Length: 149
Image 1 (cartoon, rainbow, N blue to C red):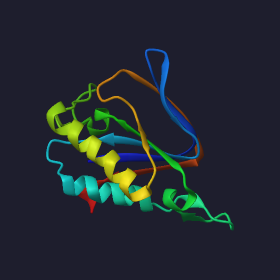
Image 2: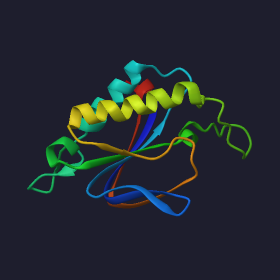
Image 3: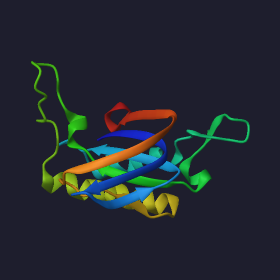
């Protein structure tokens, strides 16, 4: 499982021109599920996401987590994070999990983040054509792969 975590001042997901979800200060998390991911991968990354110290403390040092700040999380499924670009110029998505595996693991990731943070995780819609807007704060962008433990 691969995540792109972005510290944001605002983020939103619109579908067919209508606002679906939005957050203010917090994290936009793009979630890519691969075919060999397990619940253990999900729990590992949910814990890392909630504990990631990328928010400034009173001294301007990135020393606080989304839990510490009471920030929100917007999680958006994104199979293109698993793109293979080794051959040619057209990415291959052969490593991306199919719907039957990816949806339950994405939902579990959101549920685990909710349990850890005590806050509702806003979501995109799996498989939908979404427009994601964000104001990256910093910018701060972190990529985490559960296979790189």
